[in-house]
Amino acid sequence: MASLGNPTNTIAILQKYNFNFQKKFGQNFLIDANILQNIIDAAEVTKDDCVLEIGPGIGTMTQYLCENAREVVAVEIDKKLIPILENDTLAAYDNITIINEDILKVDINKIVQEKNGGKPIKVVANLPYYITTPIIMGLFESHVPLDSITIMVQKEVADRMQVGPGTKDYGALSLAVQYYAKPKVMLTVPASCFMPRPNVDSAVIRLTRYQNPPVMAKDEHFMFDIIRASFNQRRKTLVNGLTNAAGLKVTKEKVLNALEQMGLPATIRGEALTLEQFAQLSDIL
Ligand code: SAM
Image (tube, rainbow, N blue to C red; front, side):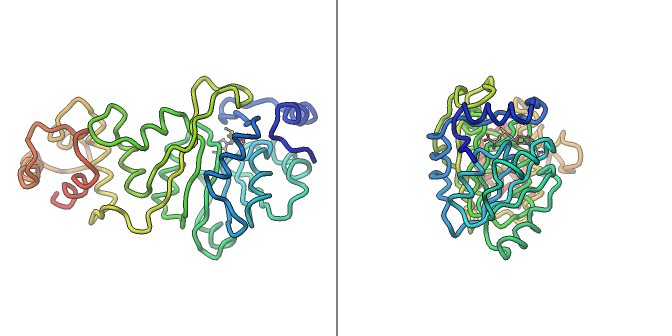
């Protein structure tokens, strides 16, 4: 079985199985051995680890994961890739479980229970970019036992995850990620490292799950409803954003009172508030 971390072997597999890339599944396969090793290093994968890989593709990174981890579970939506993985590229490994499913529909908590006795796992993936946010939010919000998530994403999205208030990239994703984890961009990856080349620059970001979150909101869901409503209408004041949001059921008077209690001006916008301030606002409301 050939190592896939180079273009020649990848092309050989694609030709052997007459595989056509599916744009709708965000298929851009890695073809750079250095980058692959850097991702494994960034994730600090060891023989103690159970790793979940989202979207193994033809198994390029999966081979590295199988070599370095105790146990690997790979969830792939494209059924055409399954025989390639099972009969060819991953056939030599006995520590891999391949699941042909949509990651957004899989019960990941059940996998963690079965494969790791409910103990925290590591997620490592070169994500399909069209569903980056729902995948990350799904992992956090369903409280999957997690040690860390090390993922390749669009560079711009990686930036959004680690910025603070007052910058143009700051938004609901920054706050959600920073509530659950400590983000760190580990490396940037040029389009030439993928086949086919994506139209955007990419970056590997590591999100290390907090054991104890830096702030605690009494009602996590309500706080995230407030955060989403605040950024839905970016150019509006926080007061207008929250009172216009259907379903939130807060009056203008209540929001104004809360801001006064917090010592914030009535004209403030959502993008100026820190995570701590959103938690405080949510608790007051
Ligand atoms: N890991 C491979 C690599 O690095 O070369 C492939 C990465 S490619 C960017 C994304 C992979 O995710 C593709 O194999 C694609 O078919 C798969 N995928 C797309 N949507 C998915 C979903 N909803 N659930 C599981 N896998 C998905």
